[in-house]
Length: 114
Length: 114
Image 1 (cartoon, one colour):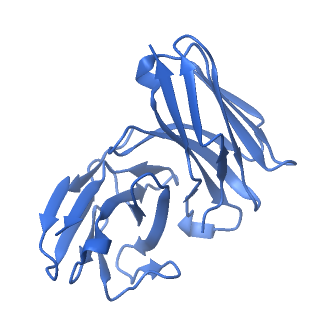
Image 2 (cartoon, rainbow over the protein chains, first blue to last red; image 1 turned 180 degrees about the vertical axis):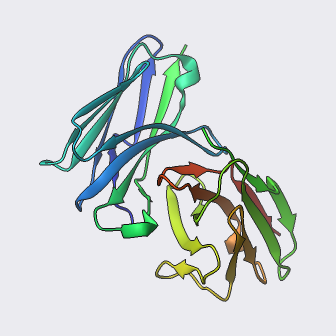
């Protein structure tokens, strides 16, 4: 079953602007991850944030996690046309034990217009 | 990061035939591998979790007799779609988990059943 719900489902911005995508989830998590997928391609892991972390940075990416609200946000600063892709949040539920099942949200389709 | 490969990257087959997809962890040992399915413009849905040397655990609604999973070694898992039908046409993605519980995704296999 789907755990995460991304918001918005589609986002179109001009190159250079910042893009913010949100993800909400339902159950307690071990960690939350963001992935990127170019059309028809595999997944690229962007960043992982653990349940005891509140914010993480990687290059132009900034991820926040609010476990009290069960939500996360992904900020891409100074967007580029090459950032055009679908972005998924994925959660590993608490107590999933050795399996560490990753459950994906429905994704946000980002279009960056040159 | 670690590399996971899938073969083939795409396959077209006739209705009623069986198709085997391989997932390999190239530079690490994967005790657990996961198989996902992604329909066009949708998110990834977990199909099954497989541990090396044991039977796969299937998600609810996934027919284990139709989607045969074999995880014979620490670097190889296979998914066989038996008696494929057009509705099985999808993008199949595997992921492999290493000893420190990080997951790495393969590039995906696009299956088209005519």
